[in-house]
Image (cartoon, rainbow, N blue to C red):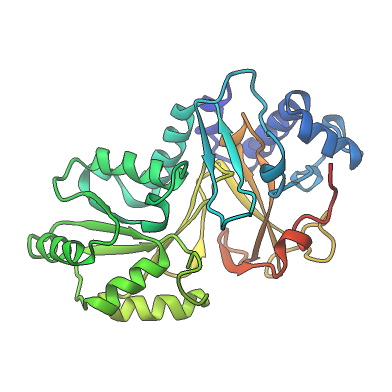
Amino acid sequence: MYSEKIFSVKSEAEFQALAFEIFAYQYQNNKVYRQFCELLKKSPGQLRKLEDIPFLPIEFFKSHRLISSQAEPEIIFTSSGTTGNQTSKHYVTDLKLYEKSFSRAFKNVYGDPEDLVILALLPSYLERTGSSLIYMANALIKKSQHPESGFYLNNLDELQQTLEKVESGGKKTLLIGVSFALLDLVERHRFNLEHTLIMETGGMKGRRREMIRTELHEILCKGFGVPAIHSEYGMTELLSQAYSTGDGLFEGPPWMKILIRDSEDALSLLPKHKTGGINIIDLANFNSCSFIATQDLGRNTGSGKTEILGRFDNSDIRGCNLLIL
């Protein structure tokens, strides 16, 4: 419906105009989001700037069926969670839209997947169903078409051998891994990689102690023998991702915007260089909800990039204290 417009956004004015259009569409077609907006006394005719758009707390994906389309979902992506905890559910009615979004965002930063050997070390995601990250990685691996590309679970010795093989052949390679598994790998094997980029997707998933990104990257840089660690910032509830190419600062594609809200006043956005909660506009998410208040903490650097600092403490409470429907 909006896909051609979304992926042709080239200016702030175009982004805002399309965000207002999608807001009006979701206000009309997403019952849960409309109720939320009405409680905040916000409607399409009242918008003057992006900051006027209500951002739905991400927790609503755990308790409500958020969908703005009449079409039946083609897939339901689910978040990881511990036993007894509710998981987020993202009802995706157009998988081609998701594929177009992550393919274009990836290509904007890393070029054509066909030119890369793509290795995915994602054990915690492979061990369950419904992961949007696995879906994305699988699609990129298929596009890679290199025989070495593929998934790895606990076979770290095999992965070490593959890395050594592609390195010796001078093949440009991308290793995507969950943080704890990358740490496991460098504790077992040491590398000196010249042709391989390492991308962490975050998350210790209860396997290790949590650590700040700078500490994690320092350990991984030393273990892999690389100058920098790349990062991916995405989530079950979105159809787009932001990437950091080694400086710890994230930038999304033109159809995605990261804003910072006041952690003490969730309805107010903060100016540049201030730290607060992360709000995301993902225009590709128009069949669900494009305006989400996450549980993550960040800082707008003023350069168009965002520093991701971690999560709120007690995020289930503080991140969702706007309203309960």
